[in-house]
Image (cartoon, rainbow, N blue to C red):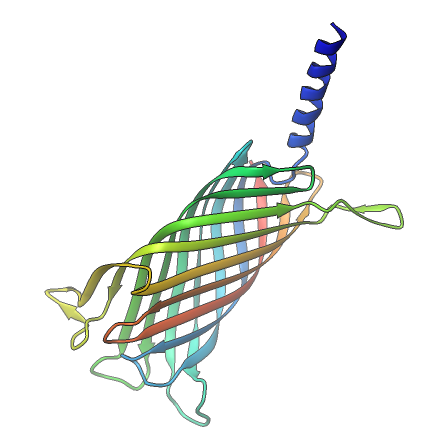
Length: 257
């Protein structure tokens, strides 16, 4: 009887520890911040362009027990200029963004750490309008990618002078293995009112990687504030070479449902 009571108490204690994870629950995400974007697009220019944008994010994050289920996206609008040329009027107005979905299962769980592995749909879009071109002023790129995903969570239980600091950390990595590409064709942007290039590619023909790092501060009402850095890189080595990298820093507010 004592053994059964101890087992029941242990099960209750473990369940209680699980409930203490600040990542548990469902959240609506809002974010505001800035983005630096670099791109090299042969359709636009042989030189690399770089510039800054304002960015906003919206999403839904869910974690219950061993499952993690996230859907979010961001949009950014800004200007880019040649990175290696000074005193020129060349400039692009760029609208870019991403839409991601992740489904992960927890493989490692301890009091302070958790590791999730699963699948992702990582979609990166970009539309660029050049201010000096008339014939081919518009360039665009769409990477509709899918592959593997991982997430690591760390709750260090920090204390300074016996005062608890409830900060936590979460890092995420998306590694697509295949992508459906929608881009301008080699000698024309559109053909029969469709993008000139529509192609399903596997890794090697394209590259698409994404890292996310979040410093998390939980509020007493269950909501969260996060300082987030995201790096999103995509490359297609076709007849029109294209590479783009987004670095964005954003404050996220997560409202617990």
